Image 1 (tube, rainbow, N blue to C red):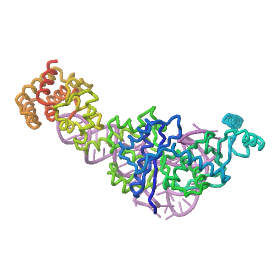
Image 2: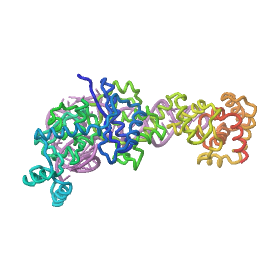
Image 3: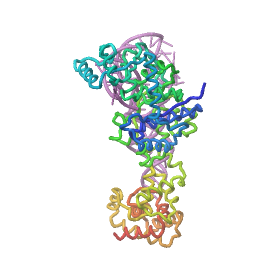
Length: 469
RNA sequence: GGCGCUAUCGUCUAGAGGCCUAGGACACAGCCCUCUCAAGGCUGGAACACGGGUUCGAAUCCCGUUAGCGCUACCA
């Protein structure tokens, strides 16, 4: 088999949607699996909506996910001359024809037919202008679009994920391939480019299934070999509707901002619609080794943020704290928390096993570094209420005992346990108030580690201040 | 409306005719561990959309119904 060539071809009209990212990932996985070439092509033929900024966002999103391309990015807009040439060729071959109908005439015809309950069909026979009229407009140099004459035959293909899909030519309208301004319509541009770039496998969203018979007809008309098509299912929001920015985070960048690790995002996306078997956390090499188009699910999948966060937590706990240093530092800077002189690594390590996102890690680190960020939460309040006077009393006791302790976790723990034993206190009643004094909440790493990480001076200060309040 | 695609726990999925009294994961509930939480361990509830076939046997194959989704542009 010759070397496979796949492509990801987003249009830069918006952010990088997670569905698009997954399509890109599947292409990438396929290329890696079979030693193929991954081509990136930006489909910027919609001049109104395409922007360089969007292109940048898409490229950055792919890079963040670790999806690399071997060729490109190519810009479809640069291939207009080839698109035109292909359209002209089809015209010359008699497989396409000039359509002099104006947009207004077309709309009127559509309204008329659909208004009377019929199904609008564009057929040369039914809508073509009388020959004299065509001749007249041609002579007058009237503008025209080029329409492809869809052959009245069965068009079928073996989809790599769906199996055989077939279409009847008569169910497909003769569609425009070249606008009256000379620019190509999507279906022509895609086929023209995929042929030129020698794409062997078209792996894309299954919202393109109905474009496929049109494109196959074009491949045939152009005399080009037809690639293998693989249509991957859509990604839905929890409401069962297509995941959209309006209701939830739909852009790759949103998850980056949420503090999701690229490896976790990649793993999660890959397992949405594809499954290597029973395991949930799949190393990249394993993923590549096992990836097969035929194993992709046919059904659309709901994007479950909760599971993503769980998965991210798994990756977070496997990740050495050093890897988190840069992103956490960045977030601390954004939050405006001074961190110079602190052993950030130790704080991150103390906090990360309980966190699900980088953002969460950074917030917890911030509380440990900066006493002014301690805000008592609901459970903290409840504890204070439950303990009454004991809250401050125990805090003071702990503060006294800790005064002379050498500041390491083991010594702190020993001192605190000795205190509880000496005064017959429940261990929890001495530990929890400390936790509330230091963090505002009742949840954290073990108290002795918390104390160690906050540092003696600051920890004792928080204990004293809280006890006095 | 037409054409097409899809249909296993709430969600992601395993399942390619007997291995299925349907397995795993997230979420949920309970228990254990424990100063708290997380992690971890154990336990529990929870699904083959419906109806017909084919077959000795169907979650798996076929047909129909229903439902959801997609497309139906001189958008991509």
